[in-house]
Amino acid sequence: MSGFRVEHERLSRAAGDFDDYGDRAGTIATELERALTEQGECWGSDAVGRNFARTYLPDAEATLKALGDLPEALVAVSGKLADTAEEYRSSERDAEQKLKLT
Image (cartoon, rainbow, N blue to C red; front, top):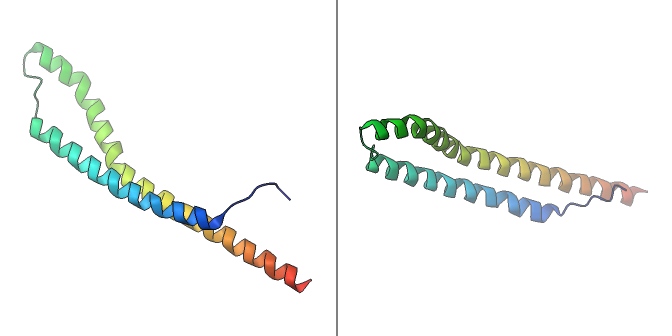
């Protein structure tokens, strides 16, 4: 016995939560991108504004990309958790069957 225990029903329910998290993250990403686009380059075009843009824009673009990728990643986690829950459920059934046969 490994001392490791999994409640596959709870794991399966938790997997479904990650689909919801993915939807919420997608909504947040869309709203943030829209709000930033509406603001435009509000830092101005003077020397200070250009310097700000030079340091801000690459990080802002990377952050928006990562946030845009998050929904897909969360849905993938959901699928992996659901698969893991099913594997545990199946292993438990198999073990029960073997015990009944002995």
